[in-house]
Image 1 (cartoon, rainbow, N blue to C red):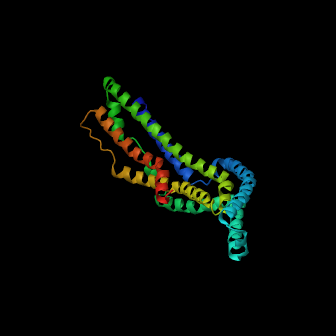
Image 2 (cartoon, rainbow, N blue to C red):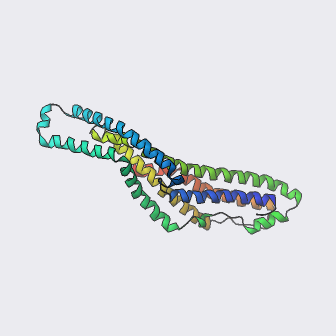
Image 3 (cartoon, rainbow, N blue to C red):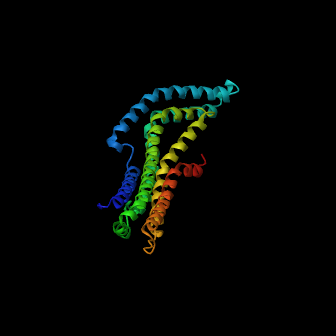
Length: 279
């Protein structure tokens, strides 16, 4: 860490960004069961188990609603294929509610395989790290007292903006993780809707939404890959013939633009998935 306050300020901002990038990588490659030592997962399992009784009650209700709404006469049940269709639907919904936790984790594992396959092509997040060029550090340290005054303002604003973007980015990733927990916790209730032909659409929408949340991890990993490639191909140019303030202002502006690309992709990952799945 440099002794110069301006350089140290920029290095701290870049360190915060790199730390959040590394944390994103950890979150994406960590399963819900292992997150924070599994403490949160234990709570989710308890909620899921407690809601199973409600899910079974709704199962019977939705099944009865479907029968009374779709059956014009009880003579329809004299037809074996009609009764068998409703019986299979009821049993399938009963299994889904009883094993809701296992079903949700099976879907997560399938989508997680896609995420791991994509992340394997990147290998790590080190290539997306941001560092301060030595030319910037040298120019700042050679600047006089009066010349360094506007540098303070430029670096304070730039560092603040970079830090805010880093926290917005990590909060979006944490939000996706917590949504996984919420979907898993309440799964028995919406899955019970599969018992009724007229209410099954609610269950389909729930499963599709859950798959979308799982696949957001793939979009986030792709965003990191795009950011890494975009940053390496558009490295900010340093013109040492201009004033130090202008050079740093241009450099920070280009770095922030590159970061905005990643933040925008991560923030919009849910919208991208919804457009793909048509939800």
